[in-house]
Image 1 (cartoon, one colour):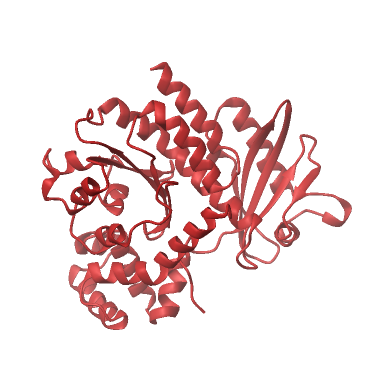
Image 2: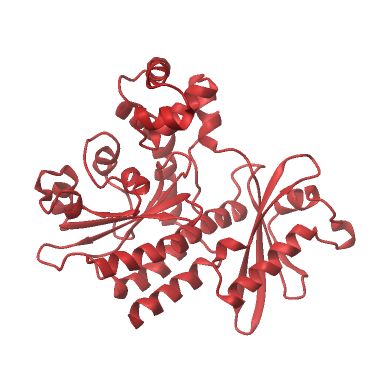
Length: 376
Protein backbone atom coordinates (compact mmCIF):
# COMPACT_ATOMS: atom_id res chain seq x y z
CA UNK A 1 0.00 0.00 0.00
CA UNK A 2 2.87 2.35 0.84
CA UNK A 3 4.38 1.69 -2.61
CA UNK A 4 1.21 2.69 -4.46
CA UNK A 5 0.68 5.76 -2.28
CA UNK A 6 4.21 6.96 -2.97
CA UNK A 7 3.67 6.28 -6.66
CA UNK A 8 0.40 8.23 -6.64
CA UNK A 9 2.07 11.15 -4.86
CA UNK A 10 4.83 11.23 -7.49
CA UNK A 11 2.29 11.17 -10.33
CA UNK A 12 0.30 14.00 -8.74
CA UNK A 13 3.47 16.07 -8.40
CA UNK A 14 4.55 15.44 -12.01
CA UNK A 15 1.06 16.20 -13.32
CA UNK A 16 1.03 19.67 -11.77
CA UNK A 17 4.10 21.00 -13.56
CA UNK A 18 4.00 22.27 -17.15
CA UNK A 19 6.49 20.32 -19.27
CA UNK A 20 6.75 18.62 -22.63
CA UNK A 21 4.48 15.66 -23.21
CA UNK A 22 7.35 13.23 -23.84
CA UNK A 23 9.14 14.32 -20.66
CA UNK A 24 5.90 13.90 -18.74
CA UNK A 25 5.24 10.41 -20.13
CA UNK A 26 8.82 9.38 -19.30
CA UNK A 27 8.43 10.60 -15.71
CA UNK A 28 5.16 8.81 -15.00
CA UNK A 29 6.30 5.66 -16.83
CA UNK A 30 9.18 5.32 -14.39
CA UNK A 31 6.70 5.51 -11.52
CA UNK A 32 4.31 2.95 -13.03
CA UNK A 33 7.09 0.41 -13.54
CA UNK A 34 7.11 -0.45 -9.82
CA UNK A 35 3.45 0.17 -8.99
CA UNK A 36 2.00 -1.90 -11.88
CA UNK A 37 4.66 -4.20 -13.40
CA UNK A 38 4.25 -4.64 -17.16
CA UNK A 39 5.94 -5.77 -20.36
CA UNK A 40 8.53 -3.36 -21.84
CA UNK A 41 7.08 0.20 -21.81
CA UNK A 42 3.56 1.68 -21.50
CA UNK A 43 1.79 2.86 -24.63
CA UNK A 44 0.60 6.43 -24.02
CA UNK A 45 -2.03 8.12 -26.15
CA UNK A 46 -3.60 11.55 -26.24
CA UNK A 47 -7.10 11.85 -27.65
CA UNK A 48 -9.31 14.73 -28.73
CA UNK A 49 -11.95 14.92 -25.97
CA UNK A 50 -14.54 16.12 -28.51
CA UNK A 51 -14.24 13.01 -30.70
CA UNK A 52 -12.24 10.51 -28.58
CA UNK A 53 -9.98 9.94 -31.60
CA UNK A 54 -6.23 9.46 -31.08
CA UNK A 55 -3.98 12.50 -31.64
CA UNK A 56 -0.62 11.09 -30.47
CA UNK A 57 1.09 7.89 -29.39
CA UNK A 58 4.29 7.50 -27.39
CA UNK A 59 6.42 4.45 -26.71
CA UNK A 60 10.21 4.90 -27.04
CA UNK A 61 10.54 1.29 -28.20
CA UNK A 62 7.98 1.85 -30.96
CA UNK A 63 8.67 5.17 -32.67
CA UNK A 64 5.79 4.63 -35.11
CA UNK A 65 2.48 2.99 -34.26
CA UNK A 66 1.95 0.22 -36.85
CA UNK A 67 -0.81 1.04 -39.36
CA UNK A 68 -2.39 -2.30 -38.48
CA UNK A 69 -2.92 -1.13 -34.91
CA UNK A 70 -4.89 1.87 -36.13
CA UNK A 71 -6.94 -0.27 -38.48
CA UNK A 72 -7.80 -2.56 -35.54
CA UNK A 73 -8.85 0.49 -33.55
CA UNK A 74 -11.06 2.10 -36.18
CA UNK A 75 -12.07 -0.42 -38.85
CA UNK A 76 -12.40 -3.79 -37.08
CA UNK A 77 -15.19 -4.92 -34.76
CA UNK A 78 -13.40 -5.85 -31.55
CA UNK A 79 -13.28 -5.29 -27.80
CA UNK A 80 -11.05 -3.10 -25.58
CA UNK A 81 -10.89 -0.27 -28.07
CA UNK A 82 -10.00 3.13 -26.63
CA UNK A 83 -13.33 4.77 -27.45
CA UNK A 84 -15.26 1.99 -25.69
CA UNK A 85 -13.07 2.13 -22.58
CA UNK A 86 -13.35 5.93 -22.52
CA UNK A 87 -17.15 5.68 -22.55
CA UNK A 88 -17.35 2.94 -19.93
CA UNK A 89 -18.30 3.78 -16.33
CA UNK A 90 -15.07 2.35 -14.89
CA UNK A 91 -12.76 3.78 -17.56
CA UNK A 92 -10.57 0.67 -17.42
CA UNK A 93 -10.68 -2.74 -19.11
CA UNK A 94 -8.52 -5.74 -19.90
CA UNK A 95 -8.78 -7.98 -22.94
CA UNK A 96 -9.28 -11.00 -20.71
CA UNK A 97 -12.13 -9.34 -18.81
CA UNK A 98 -13.77 -8.15 -22.04
CA UNK A 99 -13.66 -11.69 -23.51
CA UNK A 100 -14.61 -13.63 -20.37
CA UNK A 101 -11.09 -14.98 -20.04
CA UNK A 102 -10.66 -16.20 -23.62
CA UNK A 103 -9.22 -13.45 -25.85
CA UNK A 104 -8.10 -15.84 -28.61
CA UNK A 105 -10.90 -14.66 -30.93
CA UNK A 106 -9.86 -11.00 -30.61
CA UNK A 107 -7.86 -9.60 -33.55
CA UNK A 108 -6.03 -7.19 -31.22
CA UNK A 109 -5.00 -10.06 -28.92
CA UNK A 110 -3.62 -11.92 -31.92
CA UNK A 111 -1.64 -8.79 -32.87
CA UNK A 112 -0.38 -8.45 -29.28
CA UNK A 113 0.83 -12.06 -29.27
CA UNK A 114 2.84 -11.40 -32.44
CA UNK A 115 4.58 -8.49 -30.66
CA UNK A 116 5.35 -10.53 -27.53
CA UNK A 117 2.42 -9.51 -25.34
CA UNK A 118 -0.58 -11.43 -24.05
CA UNK A 119 -2.57 -9.47 -21.50
CA UNK A 120 -3.68 -5.97 -22.42
CA UNK A 121 -5.04 -3.34 -20.05
CA UNK A 122 -6.45 -0.06 -21.36
CA UNK A 123 -7.21 2.82 -18.99
CA UNK A 124 -8.89 6.06 -20.03
CA UNK A 125 -7.30 9.26 -18.75
CA UNK A 126 -10.38 11.24 -17.67
CA UNK A 127 -10.49 14.46 -15.68
CA UNK A 128 -12.85 14.76 -12.75
CA UNK A 129 -15.13 16.84 -14.96
CA UNK A 130 -15.44 13.87 -17.35
CA UNK A 131 -13.25 14.91 -20.30
CA UNK A 132 -10.99 12.20 -21.71
CA UNK A 133 -7.58 13.52 -22.76
CA UNK A 134 -5.74 10.27 -23.29
CA UNK A 135 -5.38 6.56 -22.69
CA UNK A 136 -2.81 4.17 -21.27
CA UNK A 137 -2.05 0.71 -22.60
CA UNK A 138 -0.18 -1.81 -20.42
CA UNK A 139 0.82 -5.33 -21.45
CA UNK A 140 2.08 -8.54 -19.86
CA UNK A 141 3.62 -11.64 -21.39
CA UNK A 142 2.10 -15.10 -21.36
CA UNK A 143 2.35 -16.76 -17.94
CA UNK A 144 2.48 -13.52 -15.95
CA UNK A 145 -0.05 -12.77 -13.16
CA UNK A 146 -3.28 -11.18 -14.31
CA UNK A 147 -3.84 -7.47 -13.72
CA UNK A 148 -5.65 -7.50 -10.39
CA UNK A 149 -8.24 -5.26 -8.73
CA UNK A 150 -5.66 -3.49 -6.56
CA UNK A 151 -3.71 -2.46 -9.67
CA UNK A 152 -6.87 -1.40 -11.49
CA UNK A 153 -7.99 0.69 -8.51
CA UNK A 154 -4.60 2.37 -8.41
CA UNK A 155 -4.83 3.24 -12.12
CA UNK A 156 -8.35 4.62 -11.63
CA UNK A 157 -7.00 6.88 -8.87
CA UNK A 158 -4.17 8.00 -11.15
CA UNK A 159 -6.45 8.61 -14.15
CA UNK A 160 -7.63 12.17 -13.38
CA UNK A 161 -4.10 13.31 -12.55
CA UNK A 162 -2.68 11.71 -15.70
CA UNK A 163 -5.43 13.39 -17.74
CA UNK A 164 -4.60 16.79 -16.25
CA UNK A 165 -0.90 16.21 -16.84
CA UNK A 166 -1.49 15.33 -20.50
CA UNK A 167 -3.79 18.31 -20.98
CA UNK A 168 -1.26 20.65 -19.35
CA UNK A 169 1.60 19.22 -21.44
CA UNK A 170 -0.35 19.79 -24.67
CA UNK A 171 -1.12 23.38 -23.64
CA UNK A 172 2.51 23.94 -22.69
CA UNK A 173 3.63 22.60 -26.06
CA UNK A 174 1.21 24.78 -28.01
CA UNK A 175 2.26 27.85 -26.02
CA UNK A 176 6.01 27.32 -26.49
CA UNK A 177 5.74 26.26 -30.15
CA UNK A 178 2.54 27.89 -31.49
CA UNK A 179 0.85 26.52 -34.58
CA UNK A 180 -1.35 29.57 -35.20
CA UNK A 181 -2.15 33.05 -33.93
CA UNK A 182 -4.82 31.50 -31.72
CA UNK A 183 -2.34 29.27 -29.89
CA UNK A 184 -2.14 29.50 -26.08
CA UNK A 185 0.38 31.76 -24.35
CA UNK A 186 2.47 31.13 -21.24
CA UNK A 187 3.67 33.51 -18.54
CA UNK A 188 5.82 32.49 -15.55
CA UNK A 189 5.53 34.60 -12.38
CA UNK A 190 7.79 34.79 -9.36
CA UNK A 191 6.39 34.43 -5.83
CA UNK A 192 5.98 38.22 -5.61
CA UNK A 193 4.02 38.24 -8.91
CA UNK A 194 6.72 39.63 -11.16
CA UNK A 195 6.97 38.30 -14.73
CA UNK A 196 10.00 36.03 -14.95
CA UNK A 197 9.46 34.86 -18.54
CA UNK A 198 6.75 34.60 -21.17
CA UNK A 199 6.10 33.26 -24.65
CA UNK A 200 5.67 35.76 -27.50
CA UNK A 201 2.01 34.89 -28.01
CA UNK A 202 0.85 35.54 -24.46
CA UNK A 203 0.82 39.34 -24.65
CA UNK A 204 -2.18 39.43 -27.01
CA UNK A 205 -4.22 37.42 -24.51
CA UNK A 206 -3.10 39.43 -21.48
CA UNK A 207 -3.99 42.71 -23.17
CA UNK A 208 -7.44 41.36 -23.99
CA UNK A 209 -8.18 40.45 -20.37
CA UNK A 210 -10.07 43.07 -18.34
CA UNK A 211 -8.52 45.43 -15.74
CA UNK A 212 -4.87 44.90 -16.64
CA UNK A 213 -2.35 47.53 -17.72
CA UNK A 214 0.73 45.83 -19.15
CA UNK A 215 2.35 49.12 -20.13
CA UNK A 216 2.47 50.08 -16.45
CA UNK A 217 3.35 46.60 -15.22
CA UNK A 218 -0.13 45.70 -13.92
CA UNK A 219 -1.25 42.15 -14.67
CA UNK A 220 -4.97 41.35 -15.07
CA UNK A 221 -6.60 40.29 -11.82
CA UNK A 222 -7.69 36.97 -13.36
CA UNK A 223 -4.03 36.03 -13.91
CA UNK A 224 -3.09 36.87 -10.34
CA UNK A 225 -6.12 35.03 -8.97
CA UNK A 226 -5.35 31.82 -10.89
CA UNK A 227 -1.67 32.07 -9.95
CA UNK A 228 -2.52 32.44 -6.25
CA UNK A 229 -4.88 29.45 -6.38
CA UNK A 230 -2.22 27.37 -8.12
CA UNK A 231 0.19 28.03 -5.26
CA UNK A 232 -2.44 27.11 -2.71
CA UNK A 233 -3.25 23.94 -4.66
CA UNK A 234 0.28 22.61 -4.47
CA UNK A 235 0.79 23.74 -0.87
CA UNK A 236 -2.52 22.17 0.28
CA UNK A 237 -2.21 19.07 -1.92
CA UNK A 238 -5.39 19.82 -3.89
CA UNK A 239 -5.92 18.58 -7.47
CA UNK A 240 -4.15 20.74 -10.04
CA UNK A 241 -7.36 21.20 -12.04
CA UNK A 242 -8.70 23.56 -9.34
CA UNK A 243 -6.51 26.44 -10.61
CA UNK A 244 -8.58 27.41 -13.65
CA UNK A 245 -10.71 30.38 -14.64
CA UNK A 246 -12.93 31.34 -17.57
CA UNK A 247 -13.00 35.09 -18.23
CA UNK A 248 -14.89 37.30 -20.70
CA UNK A 249 -12.30 39.38 -22.53
CA UNK A 250 -12.44 43.03 -23.61
CA UNK A 251 -13.19 41.88 -27.16
CA UNK A 252 -16.15 39.82 -26.02
CA UNK A 253 -14.54 36.38 -26.39
CA UNK A 254 -14.14 33.87 -23.57
CA UNK A 255 -10.59 33.12 -22.44
CA UNK A 256 -9.49 30.22 -20.21
CA UNK A 257 -6.57 30.46 -17.77
CA UNK A 258 -4.73 27.48 -16.28
CA UNK A 259 -2.37 27.89 -13.33
CA UNK A 260 0.35 25.52 -12.15
CA UNK A 261 2.92 26.01 -9.39
CA UNK A 262 6.57 25.32 -10.23
CA UNK A 263 8.93 24.24 -7.49
CA UNK A 264 12.70 24.54 -7.87
CA UNK A 265 14.59 24.15 -4.61
CA UNK A 266 13.13 26.58 -2.10
CA UNK A 267 11.77 28.98 -4.74
CA UNK A 268 8.14 28.87 -5.81
CA UNK A 269 7.02 30.16 -9.18
CA UNK A 270 3.76 29.95 -11.03
CA UNK A 271 3.08 29.26 -14.71
CA UNK A 272 -0.18 30.60 -16.13
CA UNK A 273 -1.30 29.34 -19.54
CA UNK A 274 -3.86 31.49 -21.36
CA UNK A 275 -5.92 30.14 -24.27
CA UNK A 276 -9.06 31.06 -26.19
CA UNK A 277 -12.16 29.12 -25.11
CA UNK A 278 -12.91 28.19 -28.70
CA UNK A 279 -15.35 25.38 -29.55
CA UNK A 280 -13.95 21.94 -30.32
CA UNK A 281 -11.88 21.99 -33.50
CA UNK A 282 -13.74 18.96 -34.82
CA UNK A 283 -16.89 21.11 -35.00
CA UNK A 284 -15.62 23.61 -37.57
CA UNK A 285 -13.70 20.87 -39.37
CA UNK A 286 -16.81 18.82 -40.10
CA UNK A 287 -18.69 21.85 -41.38
CA UNK A 288 -15.88 23.18 -43.58
CA UNK A 289 -14.55 19.87 -44.93
CA UNK A 290 -17.87 18.17 -45.66
CA UNK A 291 -20.49 20.93 -45.70
CA UNK A 292 -22.41 19.44 -42.79
CA UNK A 293 -25.29 21.24 -41.13
CA UNK A 294 -25.19 21.97 -37.40
CA UNK A 295 -27.30 18.91 -36.64
CA UNK A 296 -25.29 16.63 -38.93
CA UNK A 297 -22.15 17.85 -37.20
CA UNK A 298 -23.62 16.97 -33.80
CA UNK A 299 -24.65 13.50 -34.99
CA UNK A 300 -21.19 12.86 -36.48
CA UNK A 301 -19.44 13.95 -33.30
CA UNK A 302 -21.52 11.46 -31.29
CA UNK A 303 -20.87 8.69 -33.81
CA UNK A 304 -17.13 9.32 -33.45
CA UNK A 305 -17.56 8.97 -29.68
CA UNK A 306 -19.17 5.55 -30.14
CA UNK A 307 -22.79 6.49 -29.39
CA UNK A 308 -25.59 4.23 -30.66
CA UNK A 309 -28.62 5.51 -32.58
CA UNK A 310 -30.72 5.40 -29.41
CA UNK A 311 -28.06 7.28 -27.44
CA UNK A 312 -27.74 9.93 -30.14
CA UNK A 313 -31.52 10.34 -30.25
CA UNK A 314 -31.60 10.78 -26.48
CA UNK A 315 -28.72 13.25 -26.40
CA UNK A 316 -30.16 15.39 -29.19
CA UNK A 317 -33.83 14.97 -28.18
CA UNK A 318 -34.90 13.67 -31.58
CA UNK A 319 -36.36 10.37 -32.78
CA UNK A 320 -34.20 7.42 -33.88
CA UNK A 321 -35.74 7.80 -37.36
CA UNK A 322 -34.49 11.40 -37.51
CA UNK A 323 -31.00 10.22 -36.52
CA UNK A 324 -31.06 7.67 -39.34
CA UNK A 325 -32.06 10.37 -41.82
CA UNK A 326 -29.18 12.53 -40.69
CA UNK A 327 -26.81 9.57 -41.00
CA UNK A 328 -27.97 8.95 -44.56
CA UNK A 329 -27.14 12.54 -45.48
CA UNK A 330 -23.80 12.37 -43.62
CA UNK A 331 -22.81 9.18 -45.45
CA UNK A 332 -23.58 10.83 -48.79
CA UNK A 333 -21.54 13.93 -47.97
CA UNK A 334 -18.53 11.98 -46.73
CA UNK A 335 -18.68 9.19 -49.32
CA UNK A 336 -18.97 6.30 -46.85
CA UNK A 337 -21.51 3.53 -46.32
CA UNK A 338 -21.40 2.81 -42.59
CA UNK A 339 -20.70 4.31 -39.19
CA UNK A 340 -17.40 2.49 -38.90
CA UNK A 341 -16.34 3.75 -42.33
CA UNK A 342 -17.29 7.26 -41.22
CA UNK A 343 -15.12 6.99 -38.10
CA UNK A 344 -12.26 5.57 -40.15
CA UNK A 345 -12.48 8.29 -42.78
CA UNK A 346 -12.50 11.13 -40.24
CA UNK A 347 -9.62 9.57 -38.30
CA UNK A 348 -7.35 8.72 -41.23
CA UNK A 349 -8.04 12.03 -43.01
CA UNK A 350 -7.77 14.44 -40.09
CA UNK A 351 -6.25 12.69 -37.06
CA UNK A 352 -3.74 10.17 -38.39
CA UNK A 353 -1.65 12.97 -39.97
CA UNK A 354 -1.57 14.67 -36.54
CA UNK A 355 -0.47 11.43 -34.87
CA UNK A 356 2.32 10.87 -37.42
CA UNK A 357 3.50 14.46 -37.09
CA UNK A 358 3.56 14.10 -33.29
CA UNK A 359 5.63 10.92 -33.61
CA UNK A 360 8.21 12.83 -35.65
CA UNK A 361 8.11 15.75 -33.23
CA UNK A 362 8.71 13.43 -30.27
CA UNK A 363 11.78 11.96 -32.00
CA UNK A 364 13.45 15.41 -32.08
CA UNK A 365 12.10 16.58 -28.70
CA UNK A 366 9.54 19.02 -30.08
CA UNK A 367 6.20 19.65 -28.30
CA UNK A 368 3.21 17.53 -29.24
CA UNK A 369 0.07 19.13 -30.66
CA UNK A 370 -3.53 18.20 -29.92
CA UNK A 371 -6.67 18.17 -32.02
CA UNK A 372 -7.21 17.22 -35.66
CA UNK A 373 -5.37 18.68 -38.62
CA UNK A 374 -7.60 21.27 -40.25
CA UNK A 375 -6.61 21.48 -43.88
CA UNK A 376 -6.85 24.82 -45.67
